[in-house]
Image (cartoon, rainbow, N blue to C red):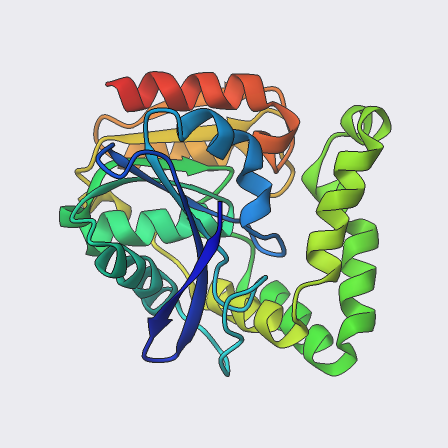
Length: 264
């Protein structure tokens, strides 16, 4: 297992590919403030019968921290650049939170590249423009100190209290991802989220779509998922017993829903 760097016109992207080269491709896209390692459990399972492609979103982990602000035209274009570099014409796509929004963008703007779309713990508009802009400004001003504060407060947004108490090592690992994220990259992604709103566009998504919601998610709620289901024809909705990072908190339920959907 090794990483590769995919070159785009505006910087490199860290990509990891696992599984048979002739198997159906499955792209996994991380949430804000995490890295491709958040998908370790899913990659181990699904690389048995899929070509699993995971990557660090621009500004995160080993991917380029190009000057911001970013947009989802850029972040979605990064996924297309990865597919092109790997010679993949079509793929399943599964993204969580910010990665889920990237999936919605692809469903609207590049449906010809998708077989099936999984949008987990996300929404057609996440948060408010003012909230994201304020967070971006704080991180740009305070740098690593702001990232450390975000890491300290992240469990309350990402996990239930019971999970945080029961799985301290996993929670601490997740905190290390956000603490280690480049402040400028994190802020630039916040600025992308500030401007991102696909509520008027997702009704155009015709790709088979699965929506995964965490029953205890305070960030992107079950109601957000229900609103997307109402807008996207034929979309399925599965609720799992978790907060915001449901693939980490409820991996068995998450993986079962993903596996059933990918089987068709």
